[in-house]
Length: 210
Image: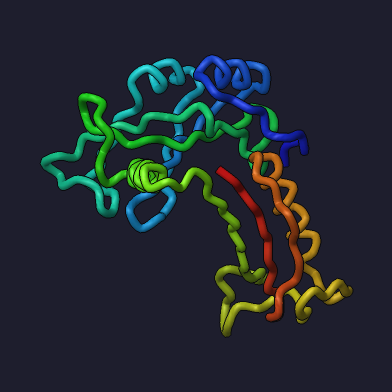
């Protein structure tokens, strides 16, 4: 895993290019979601960043859930430099970065089915109605299992702990710690984390204000 330094702030393509050079970033993953919220990604070589920022990277949108049909399949992923971060679970040497993308149609107009564009329109409408600030508090609850694909029987949990337990049974504590450190490297502040009610159930809670 990469070092535990805080995520470097980027606002412009030049900011990204500097971090890429200074941190020996070799690959850039371009991220976006389909209309169901499923994360989609493709990777480009760092040498392609200039072209990506200038005109975006083309892809076939007909295979993405909720995107255009085959006869209107050409779409463009335009990376947002403000979302750049180095992925902490990839090697430090020849590192991998990521950026979220706005989805556009040929000609540069926003694609009306892009979830980021939909959110921007919703925020604009909220602002027109007089709502200037919104608070987001993602509360992620999840389970740790010994194997994603057990050979037979149901998945086996890592511990038998309960709500707020901190015992030798809480085998997921170290994994939860690594999760928090990785989130912080991506610039996501974690306010608190703890064992939840169920066996091997954990919670990570974050807050963001806009």
